[in-house]
Image 1: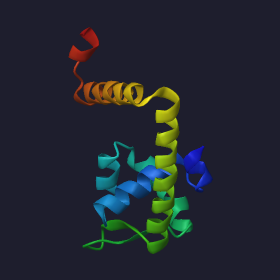
Image 2: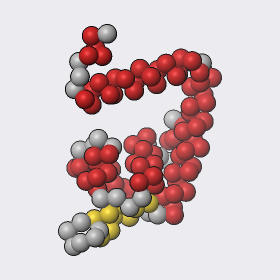
Image 3: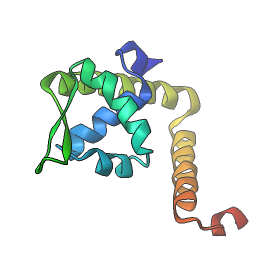
Image 4: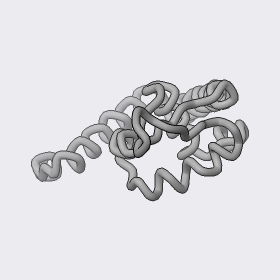
Length: 124
């Protein structure tokens, strides 16, 4: 809800944040960093480029492309970041900082377990 009020979907905010953080990046590298299917990434990039938040231009050679945030994209990401922080503060207020921290730890452990294919954490 908070990020939507900034005119972004959560996936768009995540994409913008990655592109701003990583700088000009090849779509394949961005898909890997975000653990996203390349075709899904392409579908998500198109409306963001149409909004003027990102450009997908030529890379180092004729076959490569680079994704880069525009000035409008940087501004939209900053707007989304303010909304994201407001959402985090509201969650902390509602659940309590300790519960939110515990939830983050649990989610991080689950993601790590899923990414490395380990079943050790599930046995604990």
